[in-house]
Length: 140
Image 1 (cartoon, rainbow, N blue to C red):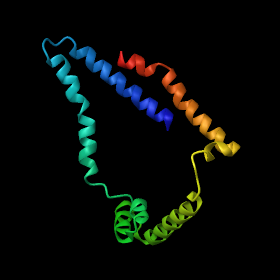
Image 2 (image 1 turned 90 degrees about the vertical axis):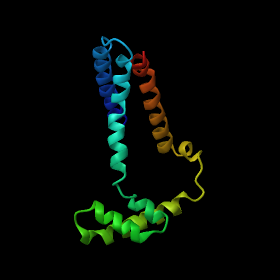
Image 3 (image 1 turned 90 degrees about the horizontal axis):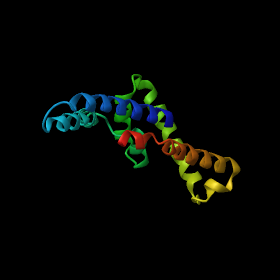
Image 4 (image 1 turned 45 degrees about the vertical axis):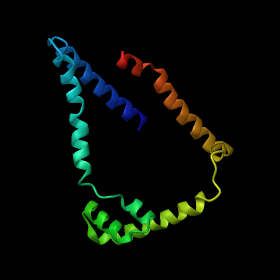
């Protein structure tokens, strides 16, 4: 996921740089207004599309609204006959997570050697991504 994020950040930066290079030759304030306006096209589509996406069935089940969770899952799944069993599976996993999360603290990430390794690898991956200097070069 980190690589996918970095990939799309790099692609977006490349497209932005190309647009900036071509609009730099335009006299007046349009040379920066055009790139700023183009930045809002994709987020505009995403904001409009979010109006049509239902709430997460899992979130609805966590808040005790099984009917709305069923309706949301029916909207998401092509096979309506599997919805009830999937709702039961989601509810069971929510219960298991609730039982497992009792008495958990931040220090548990470091107590178990496997979790400690995962924590260090995650922090190292994010740190090394920032240390590459890509964002500095992009922002320059």
